[in-house]
Image (cartoon, rainbow, N blue to C red; front, side):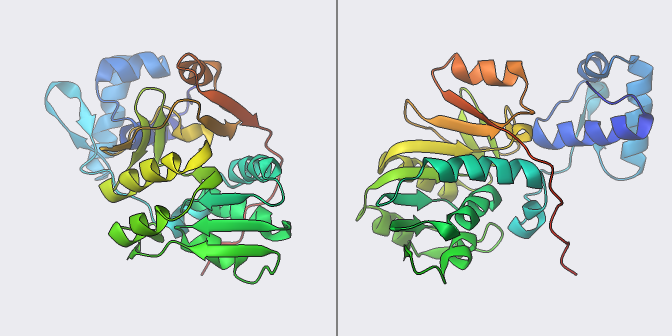
Length: 267
């Protein structure tokens, strides 16, 4: 249910603007169940605070959709990411060769794999490398290339060339946003191209995305996924969110979220 308090409503407006580009006063009025004049006051306050930019017709838009760094994203939806990671780790069998994308949720999966036996893991992400570097029972392959600092991911032609040398039982992909018709939304075209290549090299494709990312399109780079892929999200996903994917033949898994404390913030 949309928040009723004015401050909570403004924060939700800001989140919607960042993730979906929701713009018109009428849309926001219907979404929150308040009058158009209330929404206009909210937008005026957010604009005065420098958090939104107004456009003609009472619409609003952010000046930009800034991409958060991997460090910033690590503590967001922490319990949901852990739940998704636990489910994903349980699917992996001894003796398999799996491919891990970069990203905080896939990094949480790498952490779960520290107790795995007889496993080969290839990855494009520094987080997975750090998690598994000292695990003797896991053989690690680094698909190196050009390091993209913001996402802590290797991208580019060297990464793609290394990828062509291997095949995988399973690939686990991250996403800035994911939609039923578009696939994976990312901030960088090199990342979306790489995700498509990764999916082609694996027998099974999983996208790990907590519920707040479903239906979101914060950027303009897209990765189209092969038929039969699996979306792994959490139990806070709505029936409408899930139905949009299942109608297109995507398997959806809802990982049960456990109450657990977030990790301490780095100083």
